[in-house]
Every structure is written in structure tokens, then in C-alpha cells.
Image 1 (spheres, rainbow, N blue to C red):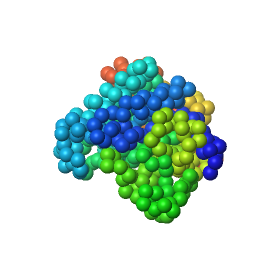
Image 2: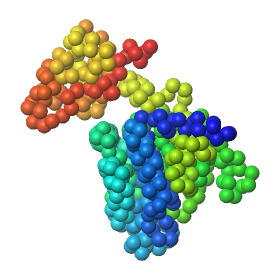
Image 3: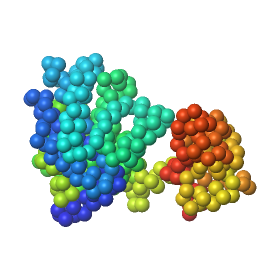
Image 4: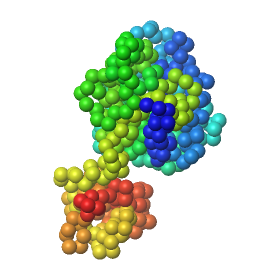
Length: 386
């Protein structure tokens, strides 16, 4: 495949509204000293700042906390016990966060540390809270830097690698593109370090058993991931309508290199499959909505024009639901016209329906969302069926 063809595929990176970039430990941390590879990280931050400057919303998933912390604590080489990993993460996270903050500060970009566990991306309420936090940070033009919360996660609730965590973050944020920066430039038919006949795979449109068989173990002694976890991450990402790129970070300005056509492997979702469409399909396909909201005629018309569902347009509700549950939206004749993820529990919703959004704080005693269902969380069934 020619450089121009790689550059053409890299448009997915440049044109993504939301971009997630995962950085591996072997790139970020010097294996001998346990310190940040400062010059390389500065070049990556330049790339991220450039993407931010052209209007993209950027999320970083950063490995390296344990690798940094273990050196400062004098822990031996090799596999650590869980409690040792947690201690190393506690020491390393503060150093890692400081390194990212310092470099983004120099470029006038606000950054935030977000620590997640497996439960934060799998349990519905915590997932919604994390998604809301990311949406708010991105809306305020900050760059979230995410790591697994290794200081508290037990073996049973850990991802154990940041490749799959990055894919879940991309899914959560409805990102269009995820780049995994690694110490290898993509997927091969076999381990290129062991098999001189290994062939490079530039593009994958279906993650078959043959593709999974190509994956091998970790390629470095610093990180916890390998090609196996990257293919698993790709399955999560493309299932959410997100393109995933595996690219080498063994060079300065690695994102710019991808944009300019360096060799890398792209895992691509099916034609027409985008994060927005996948999410809408999931909402519309809910088998048993938890409740029903009946709206007035004016509100029903507003929804068809792409508006959010405000409390003032709701005449009555039925069912027992919690924030984040899927509910049906009915027109005045009782016909289901939409489904959506409701922003309030049934108890709170009952207190605000028929009222203006400006009254919500006085009615509930706390400030919630202005919308009962935001348009991004609402599916018009007529459009979905069409």
C-alpha cells in the first residue's frame, strides 16, 4: 500500500469530531530510569494541541503510572503483586498527571485527570456519570487524561491493559476515531520479531478468527498489553462505529506521521456505521422500555424537528424508571413516536413535567438538566424505521 493510500485513510483521524489517543507505557516511560520520555512526550502534546486547535475534541488514555511508580519505590523488575502494583500506581499517577498538565499548560490548554475502573464503564449509572463528566470537560475545551484507577481496582474488576480501556472510553464518548500508539506499527500475520516472512496487514474490515490468531503477546517488558489486547480493543471500537488505528509511537510527532501517511493498521466499522447511528440503534432496539411519557401535540411536532424533550411538553408519565433508563415517548393519541434515555427518575420527573426548565431547581432543590431527554439521547422511531 502506498503512502498516499495510508494518508487517505488517515482522514478518519483528521476529520473525527472526537478523537481518543492511547499512549503505551513503553513509549511514555524510560524502562531504565522510570522517568517520562520528555522530548517524545512534548512532540506528542504538540500533535494533540494541533488537533485541539483545529476544533477536535481530544481524549488521552495514558499508561505509565505503574511503570513510573515502581522505580521510585525501588520495586524489582518482573511481575508485581496486586498490592505492589497499587502502591506503584499511587506514586506514579501524581507524577504522570503532573507531566501531562505541565506540557498542556505551556500550550494554553486545560487538562483534567480522570481515573476509571472496569465498573465505571460497565455499570449503567456510573457509565452515565463518567460520560457526562467527559462531555462537560470536552464542551469546556479541556483535554481529559484517563488512566485505569489501579490504586483501588482489585484483580476481579481491572481491565489490566489500557487498550481495551481506551476502546471503552471511545465507545462511551461516541468518538469517531481511536489511535493506539504502540511500539509496533500495526498488525502482522505473525510476530515480525520472530518470523521474517510475517506480512503487514494495512486494513481490517472484519475481525475474524484468522485475524485474532495473528495477535501475539506483549512486545515490551514495560507495558501490560500486546497485539491480543489491541485486537480485542478493535472489536469493541468498531462495534461502536469507531475507526481504530494501531500505529508506531517510536518516532517524534507520531500523530502527524499517521496524518502524513506512515504505515499503520486501520480497523474499520461497516459502511455507514457511525457512533451516532450505533447509539441510536441501541436506544431504538430496547426490548422493554422502563416507562412512558405522553407529550402534547406541540411537543410532538417539536420532536420531529430535532428538538430535545423538555418537561413543559410532557402531559403525563407512567412506569418506574431511573435516570438513564430507556422510556417510550407517546403522542396525545397514545402512539409511540420516540424512545430515549431519560435524565430524571420517575419520582423526580413527576414533579417537573408540565413545568418550565427554569423552575427545575426550585422544584427539586438541585440543578439538573434542562431537558427531560436530550436530543442526542432521543430516537424518532419513524426515522429509525426509514
